[in-house]
Length: 68
Image 1 (tube, helix red, strand yellow):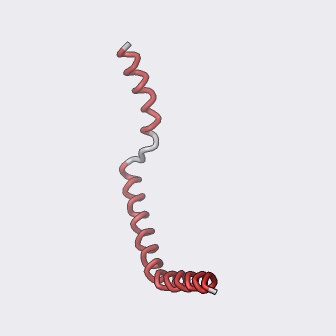
Image 2 (tube, one colour; image 1 turned 90 degrees about the vertical axis):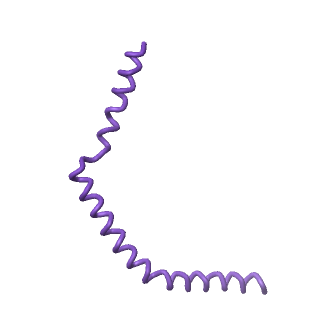
Image 3 (tube, helix red, strand yellow; image 1 turned 120 degrees about the vertical axis):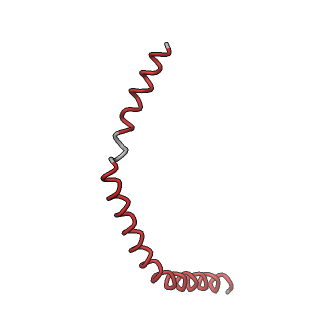
């Protein structure tokens, strides 16, 4: 019974190893994610003041609409 359980667990875990990429492609993946992070961070830093200003304008419109 223990042997059957061992084989059942072992053979059910084998497909999960297919989702783990090999190390040589993992380095490329990490490098690509770092590049995307740097580019998106630069865009977000430029866009953040504009979004904050637009958000405050929208909130002020809703506030003035509910007062009167």
